[in-house]
Length: 119
Image 1 (cartoon, rainbow, N blue to C red):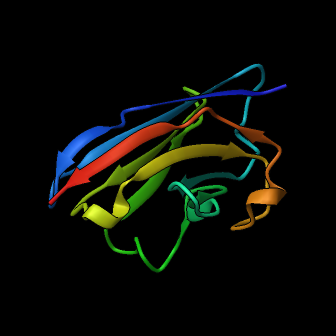
Image 2: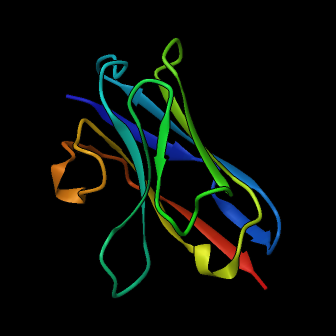
């Protein structure tokens, strides 16, 4: 089993930055594809970014603003979010061992961290 714990969320003004972290425990996730999704009330969970080795894959809505990375020595995945917009407001979830962009493909999920961007 893999446990995922997200951190780094909070309240930020539009144009600001946040870095989310996802710490994994239970086993190494170095061989897993890891991803970030986000969700707002009443909407389905939305793909944000994924990483397998070093290259990230991004949703069009965040491309050029967000960067996903991983540190396998720390069993941790990061999401650097720059130039934040109010529409980025959501609960952000970390996921492990999946396809690419399909939420149903991922085996493990964290509890989520709230990101709120004020205008």
